[in-house]
Image 1 (cartoon, rainbow over the protein chains, first blue to last red):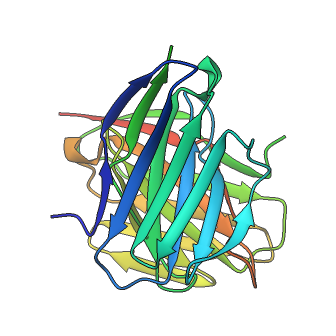
Image 2: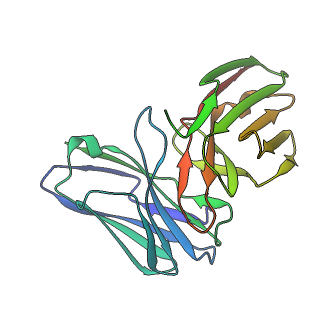
Amino acid sequence: ETGVTQTPRHLVMGMTNKKSLKCEQHLGHNAMYWYKQSAKKPLELMFVYNFKEQTENNSVPSRFSPECPNSSHLFLHLHTLQPEDSALYLCASSHSRNEQFFGPGTRLTVL
Amino acid sequence: KNEVEQSPQNLTAQEGEFITINCSYSVGISALHWLQQHPGGGIVSLFMLSSGKKKHGRLIATINIQEKHSSLHITASHPRDSAVYICAVGFSGTYKYIFGTGTRLKVLA
């Protein structure tokens, strides 16, 4: 069983929907990350939380809203998305700035 | 121009061949990571380097800080090594990372 889980694994939503992605890590790490991976583009860092405090926001549009209630859980709330937001969304965690452990990702399609 | 460049973008090799994937970066970094992504999306961290060389099984990673360059070598390649290999750089004092576009490797039996 992977130490980082993500749900759902696949999500299809309309542009007017509101949905949330969930990430949970069982590794005792302090840092959690959201990444976006679009076709033929490098992985893009979206947000980083360290001990529940946001430390990085990579100029992400406000239609993506992260939430980190504790060091083990991370959410990404989605609302009024655009078709170009369709991508693989990956969560990761790490102990400080050491190697990151990735979840399996959520494949998001926005219609 | 991306701050992290990988070469080649695609690579096909025969089983048993020695493989080298390169990563060059244009900014000062505190550490460099090599990641492996299999079809379906799962990403595994292979190495984290700040200097010198690391070895794990058939994989070897090297970094030259002065030349801003790292290489990932695979010895005695196998079809199960087929994946996308991604280089990422991290910066001192932050949790910010910049990723290369990846090298798609296919090893034929």
